[in-house]
Amino acid sequence: MVSCGKDDDGNDLNVRDNELAGSISGHLELDPELEYYLTGPLIVEEGGVLDIPAGTVIKARQGFSKYILVLQGGKIYARGTADAPVRMIADIEDAGQGYWGGLIINGGAPLAGTDEVGSTEVNSSYTYGGNDAGESSGELTYLVLGNTGARSSTDVEHNGLTLNGVGSGTVIENIYIYDGADDGIEFFGGSVNVTNLLVVNSDDDMFDFTQGYSGTLKNAYGIWESGFSSSESDPRGIEADGNLDGTFPTHVNQSDFRIENITFDLRLDHASGDPARQMQDLIKVRRGAKAVIVNALVKGSGAVGDLIDLTDGKGNGDLGSQISLTNMLDNAIDGSEIKPADAEAIVIESGNIGCDSKLFSWTGYEF
Image 1 (tube, one colour):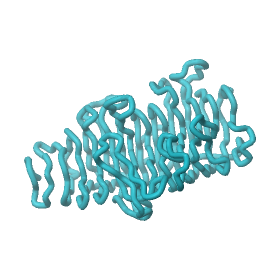
Image 2 (spheres, one colour):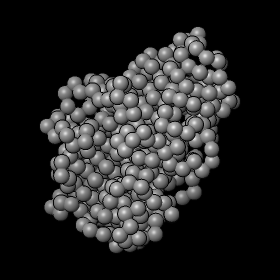
Image 3 (tube, helix red, strand yellow):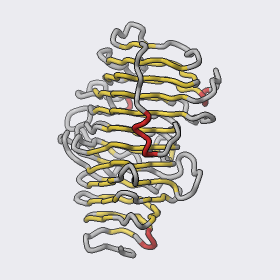
Image 4 (tube, helix red, strand yellow):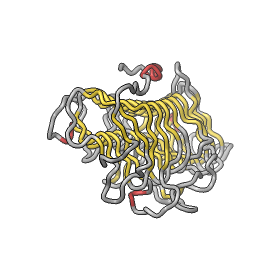
């Protein structure tokens, strides 16, 4: 451990009294026997490695500047286990949404367009994207992210987990994200695959895809709990854009991804006309995006504007999308179930069972 300055590996950081902030350009392995506090941005530089063993707890102080960012060429290994997950959470109980930033990984995998690079939303000086679809930014397994999504303005805000141009060589599985502002998880391009993902009480979208994402999300479960209300105007279960903000409709390699086994569990009391208690769209695929979604299930008592909507003022979703959804909501759906109605491979049908909640027994969450 060091107090300030650089350690023997060249890390320019502060680990005084177990406080984490600064830059990692060498190799930093945390001690699972200690409890750490995130007091400022923790940046894993190109060539740097952040190694977080099973059972490690990182508690974030409040504020937008409290986040962990892995730059292109850096790596993070947060390798928890079912019995000893890694936890990145608030430093107080009942912190609510948007208490601290979250975890951001910048990779070198392709984005929509040709040789495009993107700028990190929370700090535009850091870029992502490239030509290495199989690149690895490390490994996240059995990781808990809580109370994330702090914002500096309406347009600049964190998610729980932000994956910017992350490649398929990165391992991400068994992730639990709860009480986050903005989105639970957002994929900005890249080709990384994510397996076993639980998102509870995300203020905006549960699962967000944009800028040419081309991987697979397998076994996903999204929950709005009883009593939850969203502060956003258009919260969704899935929001998928082919390109960034719908401003690049001619880009090649628009988002083209797959989701297998997904459940949306809306436990809210039905409150017709109250937007804070209604999901605008369950599944929104727009702006050139193409999605294959199999074995999707929605259940509970919450209200939804549209179940599946491929229409948008900045461009519709690809009509080659294939979506199968079983609707087991207790209440009637407000508005159209499918838009456009002639999307032949978009179906509401019986028989889907969605994601198995037993996959998340390690979280301790009571389903």
